[in-house]
Image 1 (cartoon, rainbow, N blue to C red):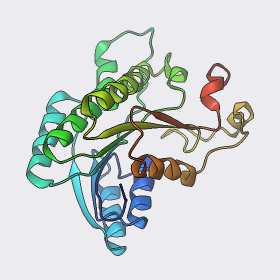
Image 2 (cartoon, helix red, strand yellow; image 1 turned 90 degrees about the vertical axis):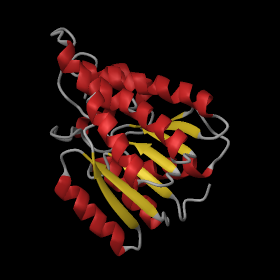
Image 3 (cartoon, rainbow, N blue to C red; image 1 turned 30 degrees about the vertical axis):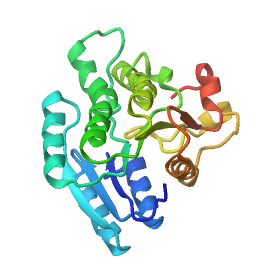
Image 4 (spheres, rainbow, N blue to C red; image 1 turned 120 degrees about the vertical axis):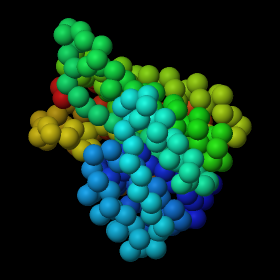
Length: 245
């Protein structure tokens, strides 16, 4: 697949990594980019203006992907407003605190849904209705780090690994389903950068957005890779028991 001229839907693309990936694919020549957001409306429309300045047809769509009803509503809107979607990037996420030992299923459920179940639903919908060719899920290089205090996040991202593997089988040969697991590239929202963390990363530095985007390009342009996870983390996933987020 060539990136130029593609139609792309990126969930969670108003901010953070999703926003960077949208700008990168626009620079590579994507023809249409659908910007999804839940709460970051102003950021979404600012991104739309930026994409249109470089000649990309940009569309903004809101959707709460943390509930079953929200997912259903968003897919209904996609059915009305979206045509072909060549590439789906599932970047929407949350990082809600939900300690493992303070068990309350209501605290875990939104994270499990938005991080794991929503990508599943979106991929299946895009495959059946929009001619999907490439799905790329954004994981986390070391989800085990969040098991105690952000247990819903851990469960959701762990589920997304399995979704990636199984849908790669189920959707072949029509579509490729892969994942990228970024490491310490952007600090989690609301949490200050911890520069001491790089001491426990084998490559001894934070990652760059450009390095994430290189992995994105690779998975889009290579048509013989499916069911894979690329760790863009400087080797951090190999040392997960020694890194504190």
